[in-house]
Image (tube, rainbow, N blue to C red):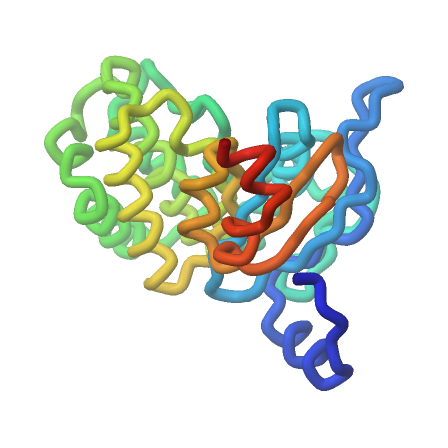
Length: 249
């Protein structure tokens, strides 16, 4: 974990990096919620941030999505996005599934999904992706004309994931996708996340359920009071004494 790299190894990893975050800071008034966080996400992997409530996980994702002012550097596929507006970040290929889902309850399932593709002009591609989302989540097909606000919590989470993917995001940010869901639904949603990742979408996952997240992740970082205190392969962190004591009981 955190082993020193050879120059060749560092160059190879830099080549594979799709999202680079350096010295990220987020302030809320006089409170610094994120204190110089740095990490890289490699193309095609699942990277997770774990930590207790208040560790800075959601603030980190909000900063990456342009939803709050921040300091530091955010680079997506070689393009600097620090300070960019949310719509610019989505157009650049990164989309977020927010904590609490954020679906539009007064619109139908299909209307929510089409809103996810608002930056696109390829009608045939949007129609094809709509069908692909229904393939991932068959229950959404059954409820395509139903108002999103009448869906169950699990169905709303499925809709939030599908809506984010409708932008054709290459990097998907997820904030606590298991929160408040029954274990069976969590298992179903995480199975789809594995499939989405296998099809080439890079995933940055924030989870309070450390056991679940680390079993899914290729690599991970642990946040405590706004700082990265540990990082490494998901399987390594799952067995780390500090992680087991603090997050795995």
